[in-house]
Length: 418
Ligand code: IMO
Ligand code: MG
Image (cartoon, rainbow, N blue to C red; front, side):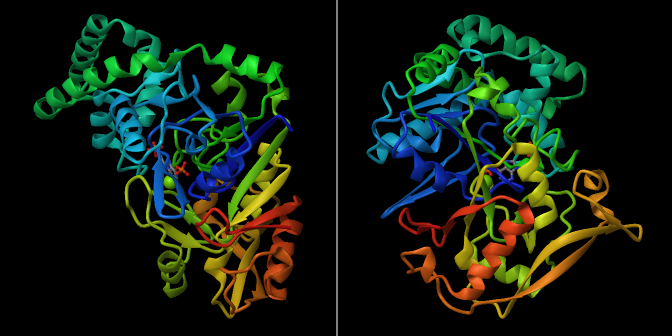
């Protein structure tokens, strides 16, 4: 299958980084189509742990080229830091990072505005939503505009004045902004060498039958259209965003892999029907090390939600599932899976009928026996305890899509093919 996409099936942090790294070994090109430095994709390679925010996780394989697509919003300072940090860890990225000329740019102004207003949604504070807002308001700048550094300075000044006039930016922000803008302009001038016509790059790769992997960031329930609006990110994080975020036709995507965590987590605000505000939730958080890779915030934890999961499979067209972090469920006597919702005393048929009233939902649970045994050292899926096999089988049944791989730890080899 020449073009494969990896999509987060829940509220992000499903383990996309690990899977993209795993599949990336066989790829020619890995591309991101949306989001920006709000993502935090962790890859553990023996001794080293890499957290990638904007550069696709395929970069760790020396022969893979990486595309940052037009649908992304790029933070130049963070991108340069990421490249420097890869270099410091022995990863040669030269000529392998291709930045779309049409990607929009996150400026320090967007970050200041996000810091001022982002607490309502509980954003990552990276300026993502504000940069996408400026894109839609026709006020944004794109990577191609960075070639004219004087023009760029003029743009920042103009946007700053507008922001001050409209009360989006406060006078008290100015001293910090001055320093940030200087660093921003410097990073922008370094970034110019990465510019590429990525639409052409991708078309050529597809024409050659190259192996292309598309890396989603965030997750379907954070998608601006299909997620729990307004508690969402500002891009189309589902598979629907791929065509517009990369400039390839929808039919070019041959296979969609959905990544689901074996339980559920969410960072930031917004409804979460299966959230466990108790000792079990705390246990999942501790044993799963559920702290944000971008912000360090503790992630909210809860049982697997098969109602949301099924919806996610439908809207993305998921062909197969990689179930991550199964080992975190190793030490439970019993486990629950949410199999239905009630709203105002009425059973709801499907997630889309309830997504706008999710805070009022009553989840129904099915209880399954736990396996109370370590899975971390297993080397084949057949070795999984029967109760674990049953748990996976039930997920599969409820979502209507096969679970083809199960991840049992952060290391590259801790994944079992079924
Ligand atoms: P990865 O790719 C989990 C969440 C934020 C917030 C909402 C909006 O690592 O899975 P934003 O900064 O995007 O405007 O914040 O989206 N969020 C994520 N949660 N994983 C992510 O990315 C996320 N990126 C954004 O916590 O609730
Ligand atoms: Mg994350």
